Amino acid sequence: MKKAKLMIYFLNEQSLFEITYAQKHLIRRAIKSTLEYEGYKNNAEISLTFTDNEKIRRINSEFRKIDKPTDVLSFPLTDYENTPSSLADEPSGSLGDIVISLERAKEQADEFGHSLDREIAFLTVHSMLHLLGYDHVDSEADELDMRRRQSEILKNMGLGIEQ
Image 1: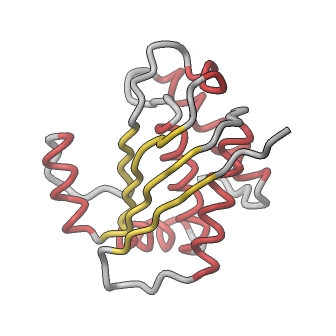
Image 2 (image 1 turned 180 degrees about the horizontal axis):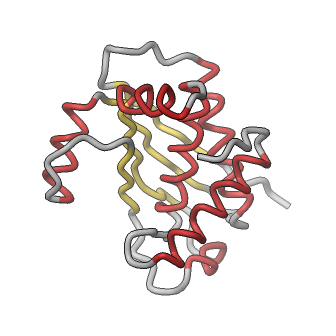
């Protein structure tokens, strides 16, 4: 059986924090752990951009009409009409884009009392679930489902701290 390929394209559009090889490796682990948890076995491409609060505020304003900074934005390239569980049957290709404000991630890490790396892993898992078709905005049940998935994926990675 041929092993699926994972391509991650990193772009750094901020200058507040250095992006280390270890952080990129952690992000790759978070993406792979999410794909494995969801049973996604196809080739996948993800674009991940690091930014600051001002740039993510502008993106959030443009695409969501919310004029304030946020921690992470997800831009799936597939509009899933079926339930997210059908993702393993989707064709391979680009899953979409993730934009993380490292400035906001650091603020949240301090607020929750854990490391920036742990927060980056959480935000990556959260965003990957969005790229795979999950959402938490429309119902409490969806929010609980996403939280459960996030917790299980992070626990599988050895990062099982509740947020």
